[in-house]
Amino acid sequence: MLRFEHVCKRYPDAGDALIDVSFRLARGEMAFLTGRSGAGKSTLLKLIAMMEQCTRGNVMLDGKDITRIGEGRIPYLRRNLGLIFQDYKLLNDRTVFDNVALPLIVSGYSHQDIARRVRAALDKVSLLGKEKKHPLSLSGGEQQRVGIARAIVNKPKMILADEPTGNLDPDLSAEVMHMFEQFMQVGVTVLIATHDIELINRLGHRVLTLEHGRLLAG
Ligand SMILES: Nc1ncnc2c1ncn2[C@@H]1O[C@H](COP(=O)(O)OP(=O)(O)OP(=O)(O)O)[C@@H](O)[C@H]1O
Image 1 (tube, rainbow, N blue to C red):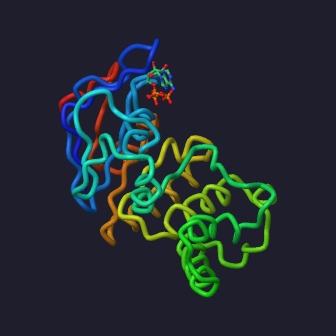
Image 2 (image 1 turned 90 degrees about the vertical axis):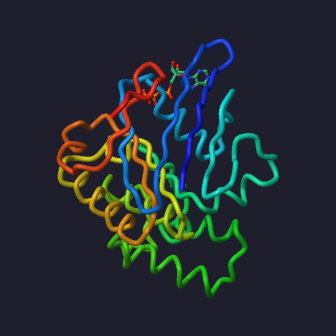
């Protein structure tokens, strides 16, 4: 599903954020990406999300080389990805329904399809019934679940999550991880950047560790 081949990323004036990174993730695999602050975790996710381009090497996503693709193809390829962030990145002046519907509106779905898919996504994260609420009236855990519903509403092949439990207590973190495991079980590839070593050890999935931009063997 995902292949990094000798990938390097250098930011102008900031040196190397990733150095000769190579790994593969199979379809339906779930892995954690860990390492200290500044090790390059977010940079690696941004290369997959096509928010940054690598300086050297190749990134293959679902059989396509996304290393140096034209701007015009990015929105189309990004539909295969669900992105989840620590700070949720919800639109606070829109309802839960509208937040989750956003990727579908951008993709040009009909009203009927949007309503059906948004409800299915909210059902998966146990938020049916909160459709008309605004994000700020929800708890942190609920807001993160809205973010997860928005990420999965397009039925992506891969989910990328950057510190998705960073603002949640241990119980809510476990709940969010359980949701990721359920997506994995239906064939979605999941890559989660996190500092939370305890969570990683408890769940026993594959771990990719970055140190100063290099992937450690493991
Ligand atoms: N847009 C940018 N411009 C310049 N340098 C950057 C940029 N983004 C990241 N960097 C640098 O690249 C290196 C890796 O940063 P990155 O954010 O990928 O690490 P991280 O492991 O995700 O850290 P954290 O856990 O703190 O989020 C750091 O030295 C950082 O300062």
